[in-house]
Image 1: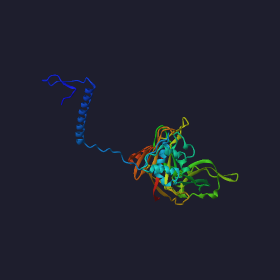
Image 2: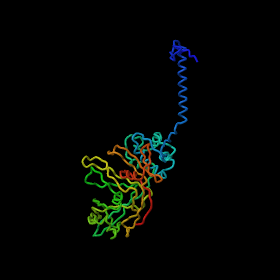
Image 3: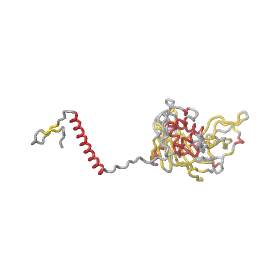
Image 4: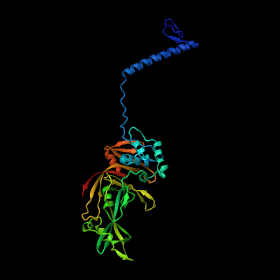
Length: 387
């Protein structure tokens, strides 16, 4: 084939020169090169395709049974609380309420991440500062405010018991019960406040439930309203030593009064679901400002609480109610006014960590390790044992 742009220099030589003095020659050259490239690429593609190894399948991860929540300017405290409500109290929230609508979206695995628009729609229904606050707020305060508007926490009555002394004998009276939604536990003081300590949660609960405290202020007494404290109850370790510190009742201006007395409490009936608030705020003695308590709690997986333990009972009989941990909220950071909130919840015997839009499965060992720094703990009743 004779190409118009190729000219033989010598009949006996195999050398060629290219001549493209006009536009037609240049066009032919372009078409020739393009055709060669297409032929080469086509052959190479066909060969590669026939022998191309199969690409490995990409693991997109296990689908989570619930969804993360978008953060709307410092709303991690809200997101962590909502995750716990959705996991532990979904059946307690009123149908048709804005809160119920939002937690249904959280629990719908096919819904996807809860959007900013959905969170904002829920916030518009809230009364008070949580309606539009752009500041980092407290998860405990939000939980209580949300419960006031859309009740879901199960209440219980804590009955105070007052013990007084008169003529060498001791008397006890139950005061009007006060309704509560959660336990609030304090950490004990220790010498080196700059270092964190570890405490067994069971010991903190026993200190709250079993201990009487000596109160020192003036109290009017109608003795006929009191019952004699029986000898069995008087020997209980939580009040035995304190009884000796009581001053006898005095009569002043026709009324019986005491200047100090013992005060304890008991719960007649515990709820099926329980929230424990670990008070992680205290006053700095040097600067008189609130600081965070970083002490750790041990043994949060299972707890026991007393039910129906009145010291007026002759035999002091009560039930031990067993609870299992189903979720908790963490505060990360040194300051009480900043930092970050996350939640860990248990669903179908599997623990999950929820950090705003991110949800991941974790093993129980990791969950229990994180629970040592919990700010709010959530429990479900397991069984009762007679004690």
